[in-house]
Image 1 (tube, rainbow, N blue to C red):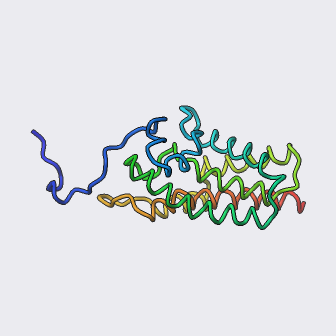
Image 2 (image 1 turned 60 degrees about the horizontal axis):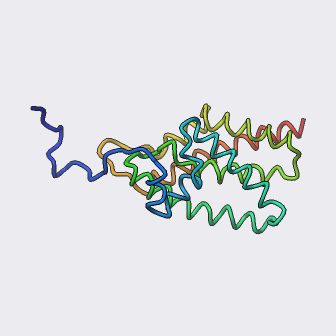
Length: 185
């Protein structure tokens, strides 16, 4: 018989890690948001699928929203997303699950909003750059990704929920810097 490394009373109260499913998504409104309205349930590359969903949603919403409305969508989306990502990560028992894609949605909306007006090719380049920085996590993105990681025995909290969003915002900033440099040259 094995004994736990910590007495049972001192072990963090965290659910056993579970997989996001359609049933899980509909158990709480936060899950629907954090899982990108189902796009994060993709069994293959959920971050990429979430970003594609964000692109489609942007194309649909863009003609109806001005700069002030986009700023409001991003600000409210960040606050609501912080809550949704925290609740969903806690309920999944995983600090930064791949199925949470609201971070990709918000960050890519910010990229598209800031490069607009842009044709399809420019949007595709923005998509590729954002996915590169988000997936590969070079330099500042890796720093941002590690900033809010859990320490041993620490429960999933608001810091991890914010961390889920933060590294994608840094990836978006890196993509925007490359685009700005490209336009400048």
